[in-house]
Length: 485
Image (cartoon, rainbow, N blue to C red; front, side, top):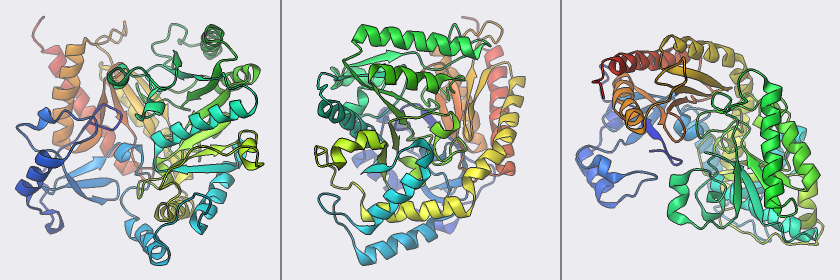
């Protein structure tokens, strides 16, 4: 399972032979895993009679497991190995230089050159969004948590301490720490830990395929979403809401892109009611949508942007919040102290890695390559509509989902039992056999999610989409031959 739910699947490419580098004592390794390791979002009973997959090496857009089997990294790890597995030695050298100079100092009344340089560089990338201040964290959930605390303190500093509520979107995932979990609209993640720390109201996401107003007329769809948001704010109390958080393209549920005018509508409503607007770009930042930040693609003007994952291209844990001058002002003028702290905020090693990764992004024109290849990836995915199981194809950049349906004409979805069978038995088995790691997810409707490394080329795209097509054709044949209920 992935850190935010949904199975990750993958198995062997035919006739692969183990490289000597990949040969490990698998029995001992599995004993260690089974006896001592707790995994994210994983029912360990699933591995009572089989091995836990263990990956030991990467090559370009591929990963290799402990048995020497090779897989396309079709989900970029978890939307984070944006540079694939080719630049480790170069980034490792930058890490080694840092460790030879300074192992650690906190960002707590003191700092170090790496944090200062990275903050300036990120502010430069975010300049089109008007964001010029950075607070560092160790990951995405921490970044969301920090954004909430900034919002709460900012409102209090401006004489509105009563603003204690937030607004998020249904099925959205924003993290699992208790603050960030408050904004995560997934029942199975929330229910074991309720009541939540932050009172949060949830509005519709931008799934045009399923929304009653989503068919055809983008302006009408946007208007319906804005009307619902206005109604929700009025119900919660306009002077009670501190923050609205949303991803430029929502991951959970399957790559929901916004209709035209959506982010401009959010900005206008938030301004009118004094609410801070946060774009969660933990996934969509650093080229995933063909821009440095997804907010740029959609003309968004958020007050804050949360980031992580692609900031280091997964070579080290690092996240943070980009903040507008307006939000930073109480904390930069000496009037307020931001009452939040993390030991490893802006760790010297992580900032050195991030700076090296940004060098590679720019030197290799990675963001531009995503824009170049997006139409081809879209075309290859649209071709998969030939399989009647495919109801919708949606996404942007290198961030896509195929929604699967029982009947394409009526958009009838699958029962929970049928969805589980289709995803975890039929499709998973076929993709395993063909060597593709992707996500088969049913937190909303059943979807196949694909998000390859940003360095993927056309041959890799061809291989990845061919595997998905072959797996879908096998699933369609199985669906047609299933026993009558």
